[in-house]
Length: 80
Image (cartoon, rainbow, N blue to C red; front, side, top):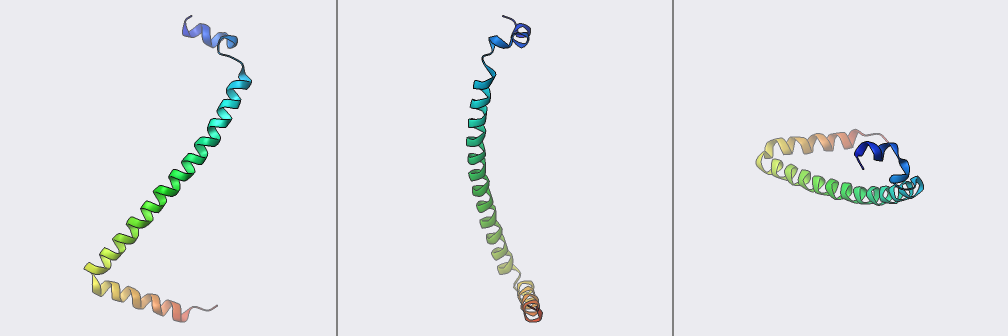
């Protein structure tokens, strides 16, 4: 059979319900897997970000101290 014949003859591809059920099951698995992968990538990103901030604070102590002072001032003037 040529490709054109498969497109015109839906019976040659199999029942639609089976394909939809398989597709739905694989979509749920893909969503769970991608969600777990997204959480792993996010955790890795946050670890690297924290490490980069620590490195920046070590190599620029004056700027880090000024940032700490500004943060303390913000916390002192914050109204609940």
